Image (cartoon, rainbow over all chains, first blue to last red):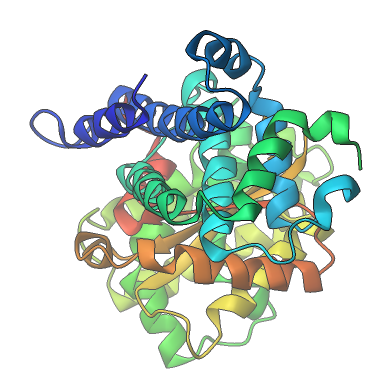
Length: 165
Length: 212
């Protein structure tokens, strides 16, 4: 799966059809935007682990939404597990933006897919903000992905729980 | 649950009328009144009292219930006269505000617990800062647990429709998030913050119920 195609799908859903986007389109757009970032990070994470395509798809399945979220929250709050905290002397702004986007998108994606009450609805501006955030996260990730802190982040998303506090 | 809808909508509407600043009877300043009128779509609407039912307020005396019913009916009558796409007149704002505050004095204690009041204070402190963008005219919030079960606060900053059209809201996402997190920390609120924007029109639609 090419993560960029998912992001483009999200952007298309925001502008598709006459009039304003419907709730169903807004929800699918937010969900697609989340999965775009999710797959972008997993793709780079698995590449760090193995060069073998078959193994990479197995490793990709080990990533979980919860652990990726936990690592992202720890990164933005400077509470990474002690075992790896010292490896990140400071969090680059770009990496902070990526982690924050993952946290925001994951929460909204959950609401988009499972909270179907009117009160859980999305507005056009809310969805537009999240998709802009995703696009910016893609750009930020491209800039920061070779930074040592990004390497730690990718490992933390895979092993956050096992690394303990 | 109509009463839950009433409490939620009335709470959201009250954030724009700032009753806790003027419920003591002090008249609003001309600037306050101008803003309250300019964005009357956010509070002076029948949807602000939609789902109201006096009977669920068990602790009220019959006389209090009668007064509350009268204030609700009076507010609704004025609100129904205000066109959805235009601000209310000054006379409508003054009359409706009086009735809104009377309702607030009775039901306010059901709307904001101590933690909510601290969240409101934090948001209002941020909005009062010199650097705060003028096209963000209000806010709404919700307390709860996020999908992972962590305590969270969702904050929606309400921007003008014009600012959204000009794409001015998004660039404020990070600065506003940072400022709100700092103010919430100062208030002792240890919840994860989820920040987003709605436009004035969208906030109004939230009160009306989202179209599917």
